[in-house]
Image (tube, rainbow, N blue to C red; front, side, top):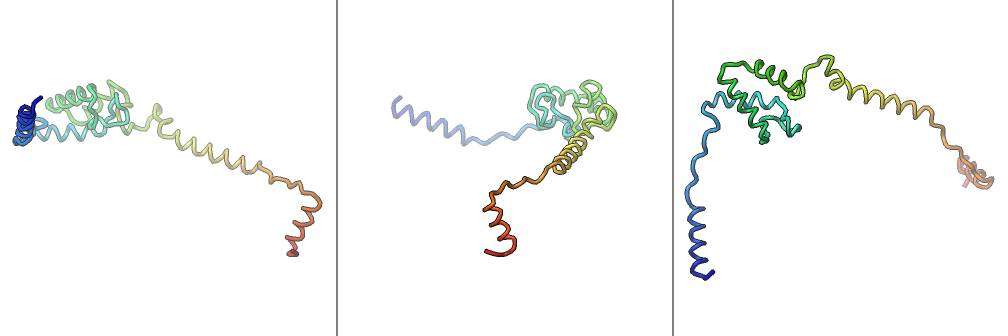
Length: 152
């Protein structure tokens, strides 16, 4: 590449970056629908990413679910109806805060049961532990007794 071509390519690249940016396209046709979508999807778990909310996920399934939620919002469904639909379809796993019911008792109470078991095991271990017996030679025993009595 000659210097003339290099400067020509460089000037084209600089002109392209200096062009004014276009305005960002709106996220949705109706901002109220988009706000409801964000509110609902922040409480839902991405089924692909699992540690990310549906609102923050960029997975294909998350985008499909957001599109489905947007369609249901436009159809006039309430937030609870939309959540119920997703729970019926994917189970309580889709909720970040699943309801307390017999199938989720282990989820809600499991950490407390594990912690209580750990505390009980620790207390049992500490009670059974015996102090180590010192096997001292007679000379070491005499020095220890002298230290205890304050004789040096």
